[in-house]
Image (cartoon, rainbow, N blue to C red; front, side, top):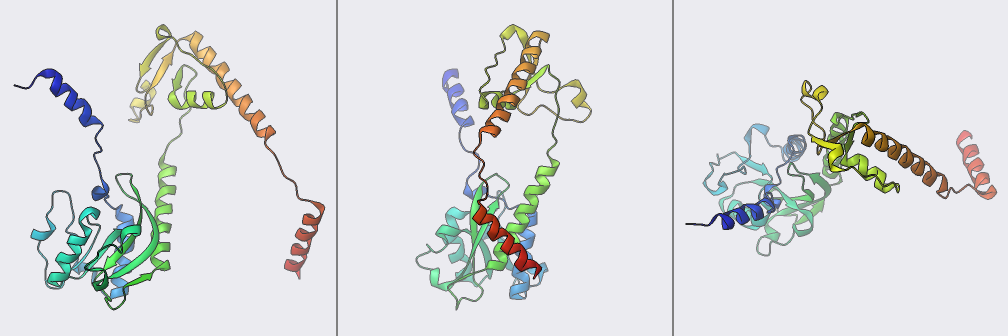
Length: 272
């Protein structure tokens, strides 16, 4: 019978084990679709024939591969070489994601595939950021080539997703009686010491006003007494003042007379 102490320790250690690896880099759907469209146009593939055998709990070796299918997917990077060998031996056409810096390391198969080298920085759904390129069975007479077009398409989509995510993140204006970790970080950054005693606060996950919106205080916060709230208000004012002073103290360079003359010459050349 396992003792309770041992079990508790194992559970504690388990919490700190990484839950995702580079084999769990699931591609955001928008980015996958951009890549699939590019592949279908370049190699004249019917999108209806594209399959994705790599999914949680799946076994690509036991999957069904219809005669006209093409594999376009993001495989587990740790066994990418084995996967490519499996498809090459069976004549199954493929276009697979690969980590850029190690895309050419398949010793026995590197000259049987084309390597589409890109400068794509993909933020996968598990939060991993990976420089991504691709390996394919198409055009095997070419060993490697760059694709500025695919790089641009993927990076443009990645940037669009970032902007959409930023727009969706709501900004909240909390009352003086709430202090969060982010607020205290700002105080520390600008040289302000602020302390809350145990009897002056209560930890809260959300305000009652947030319940209807199903929102929470990110990372939780502290509900403060009147006295602590007053000190917090003063601390934030001091932090804002210190931030303003730091901005004023920043070195600000001005254009010289010679540089202004160059600017005027540029202006004139544009008008001409």
